[in-house]
Length: 391
Image (cartoon, rainbow, N blue to C red; front, top):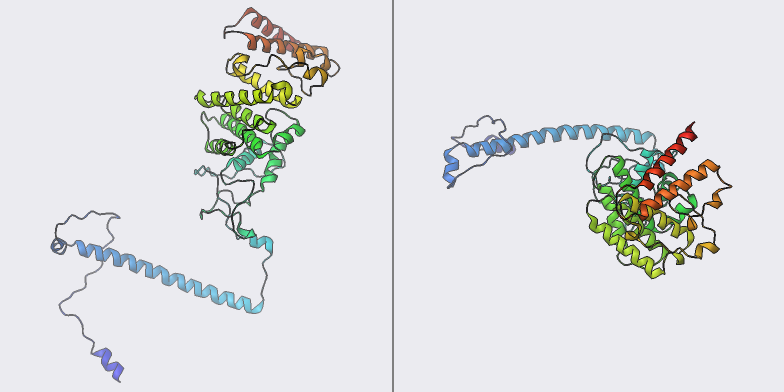
């Protein structure tokens, strides 16, 4: 009885009339006033209170509906758990871990990259390069997280790449088997990619190739990330060993098409210094010396430079006379001798390779970019030989 009397005799505030709530106004509204009375004189405070209470009522409604749904789900789950208690396999539990973050490009391209590594297609190679060149891919994890969460990124947002991250070693093997840049020698690619720095530098050149294939005239985010990782890793290791020479050579190639010549000149001078400290190309392994020679001569013709502007390769000396050179190409042959190819190809093919070698030497030894009579004759002879081969 006492409780009912207290509730019935509760006092109500007199002289106050409740007005219906106003519709929510604009999201942002500036109010100019010099004194609090100016708020009371107008309907500004009523608009503010109505807007706040309107949002509060909306949140209460949604919260009540969510609670009712959760209650129904809990009751259903309790009924199901009372009948049976299923277990979640480890493979399914791993899918509950948040996926890794996407690479630096923040634009949704409305499609997932091809993540199958069965065939070395262009999309497969580009997906591999994007994963290797992304800043989140490292050779080893330094996080102190549990094993199941060591690959979870700090960013909580979902990833475009919803599949599990491929281990770095697996990515490297897929890259070696899929990449056809520079050479098709599997054993040589294994050697180039055996060191992390030379491997990442090779990936940076592949990133530049991919940018050109995609129609980009500047470095993409993946390319810049790959170059930055190589440069930061090379800061404390400038020994004149094979790995450093390969890394600087790849960095030089990656800057060949850049409009800014400063980076190209820095890498060119660095490569010259390393080879000079090594004692010249004659003191390097034949396979590495041939690789450096072919790529530097390609750069010389690509940029319209004289061969001596990049590197003096006048004396490959008697080091190759005593040892068989593993590679012979139209850009490089020991002492210009193609006799070793005579038993491995037909005579017309050998003539074409010889003409290509002479034409390359004409480009490398010229003092300016003007076309000479020798160039025109070599062109005509090559075209005539190719037309005969087609027939």
